[in-house]
Length: 107
Image (cartoon, rainbow, N blue to C red):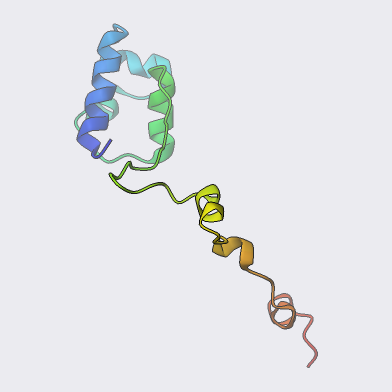
């Protein structure tokens, strides 16, 4: 999905497919018709509100990386196959900095 418009269209289609009116969303998720109507019109919503709506419409959120032609996803397996180590694996705590951050540094 690339836009709020696509998401709102999907929500409206699913609601209709389930045979639910906008006003019925109050009974399903406690959201008034006017508020829900704005969501289907493409209004920006908080993530927590989106989760409520998805639950009421028997949908779930899925996030996946974009597919780029000619590019593979940057995964730990790909890095290992290229004999590279991910930055997170090579980071070490600097013991001299720990005292500064956690207040045990001698004064």
